[in-house]
Image 1 (cartoon, rainbow, N blue to C red):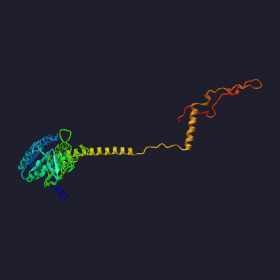
Image 2: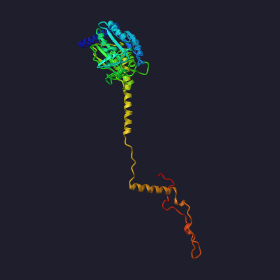
Image 3: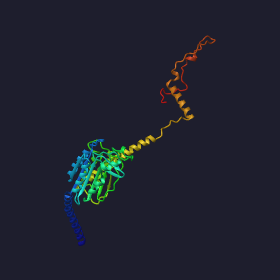
Image 4: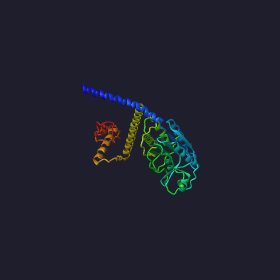
Length: 368
């Protein structure tokens, strides 16, 4: 009995110690996350002379405001030329320190040439593929600046249509090429490699609008944030656009650190939304399946009745006609009068009451 009591007391003591450690470590973790240096470079190019885009500048400004609210030091550039873009890359790299978190966001035109991705400034004069290397910015030039950071994120909403596609030798050069993410880096594309993303019909692009919503979700790791972005973009584009990521992250990062109550509430909302989405998907599939079955179902062919059945139907029709028009109700013309030898008229032939002897009890109504 004493051993059982000591065992229970030891377990209770360990629970108290674990709870106290959690309460002490959690504020320290959130304080460390808040004190961590976070630097972001945001570029949005819209004012292209040959093919102007509507949303990139709006996307860049919205992302800059959101990242500032999340504690990032933001460098914002809009409608930048080649010199401004290369200079902003250098400034971005100088602000990074060992152990910091870096984020690069770009919205605008981007092309791939021979497996390399290039971001196009607004003053680019591209006549052919060879001029891309001197008129555009190589994405590798940006990746070289991310060395000091412990965790880096590169978000490219640049997979729009290639305005210089007719001047290139290679056909179908739309979208960006796949890049292997360096260690500690996450590369996020607005759509799959080689595909083209939509610019959107609202004030923001389809991808950026989903990203802004996902950044507000508390308690999500960076990988979960982009997973939510992919789900929402696929749903909004009806499957036409699928975001894609290449990750080699070695650490964890939360855009929006939250308490346990907020995390539980967010998880409950996500579970309810997923359940509702699953029910909606199943209902749509059921309706589609019923519609396909209705189209495939063979039409019913009216079969001709057998001879015996035809005779039976003909007899029933005759009976019906007799019921509707009984013979005793039809006024007949009397037969001609004939004289008997004794001088009396033989009129008894037509003076007798005429009764329909064939259908004496037939009803006047018929269902046939």
